[in-house]
Image (tube, rainbow, N blue to C red; front, top):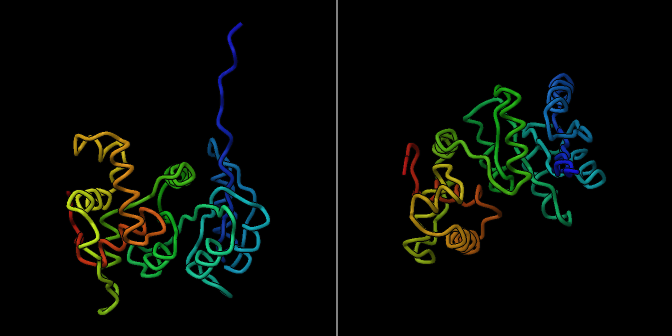
Length: 226
């Protein structure tokens, strides 16, 4: 008798947004997507941290402009004060929202635009839950370029080997580890080692933060395509 197919558990999701209509709409639409279970909502940054710590979702979909505590500070607090914290995906209305790069620097794993089709937002949630990053290189480049003068930070170029800088540039184009391995004709394990070294040397929370640092330092410029 054949065994039933093995199914992966659904990704649990908390939605944080100060607009009730937006929150309710996202909850209804995302709950209908395969592989996602919405476990709760939060109306501001303070509530987002409290509910995430009590509900223990896999992913928090975090708006950045919220009362009491914005999504940047909520992300920073959640990741700093929570054992085995959830992944955070920033959701925003505008591609040039300067708050997004700050949230990514605080440890968010990626961002999505509210105008995207719900299936793409759902896929972003699944991808981040699996440990990958959600990047829109062109939009991220524009955000960093629009930040105030003097906000850039120096990249410790000497700390990275030539190969590690090459891997970082490919990460900034949005390539996954398998795609980087194929591009460089090396093994996946080699790429994982390089990515780990990059994160450690840059003091980055995750690969998304490393890409933000690469843009801010000028190692990668908006429009870079590999």
